[in-house]
Image (tube, rainbow, N blue to C red):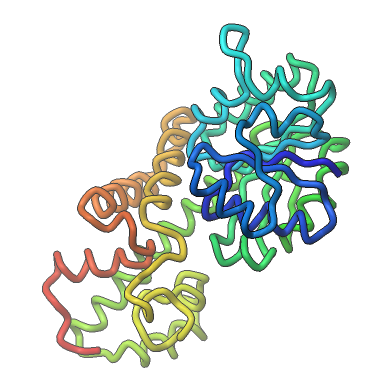
Amino acid sequence: MRIAFIGLGHMGAPMALNLVKAGHDVVGFDLVEAATVAAREAGVAAVDSAVEAVGDAEVVITMLPAGRHVIDAYGSADAPGLLAAAPPGTLFIDSSTIAVDDARAAHELARAAGHRALDAPVSGGVVGAEAGTLAFMVGGSDDDFAVAEPILAAMGRRIVHCGGAGLGQAAKVCNNLILGITMIGVSEAFVLGEHLGLPNQALFDVASNASGQCWALTTNCPVPGPVPTSPANRDYRPGFAAALMAKDLGLAAEAIASTGVDAEIGLLANAIYQRFADGGGAATDFSGIITEIRATSGQGAWT
């Protein structure tokens, strides 16, 4: 299919390249010229404007930093954008991670302009984007999902239709709420173990085969050694950056406030990650939160 890909950053560029490898005709654009050039050198046809990219597209995929960027890119009567430039009936797939309300607003804008829309945020990070093993959480109609599924399959391994408009984003925010909370819990447990004299490997051997088993422990273990592929073994280079976890937990906090859900632990996790990101941890992997816990607890003497 003819696909325009808007947003060729660390996630977008490898996703677009996987579409090219799957045989799609992909034209990309990024506001950062260096990103556009890098994508072009990697094999993605890239042009000088987003409007040019969508001119004859059947599908437009956006991967942008925040909801306001998606809404602005789609355009309005006063400032026409992608919706005005795309052919009638184009399928817009937004894979950004944004607020549920923003996702629903984007759906409405697309439909009002005569297009189709899905929200399809991803999980899996840069490694998953490069390997084509992302998980997609999709919100929108059954018919639009049926069109999008084979396209998303070129970029991901697991594709789940979560329901109507905005429910892909709802699934993403709920999943990352779980992830942020569990990473803090795993990190606190390791620091407590260190202070009690328990070797990290011994705790891992117990918890990874007991009721404490979880992804934050067995895949993204926050201490070096037990899981050789975890970011802890490469000085907490992301991975999934703490700044992105802080952003996602901020979206969760917005959703909690708007729904009135009693989510004390979720709100505390949001505050902890915001403090960590603002205090210099933004560019580290989110599992680096353990360094903050150690710093405020006193260095553990046992490793």
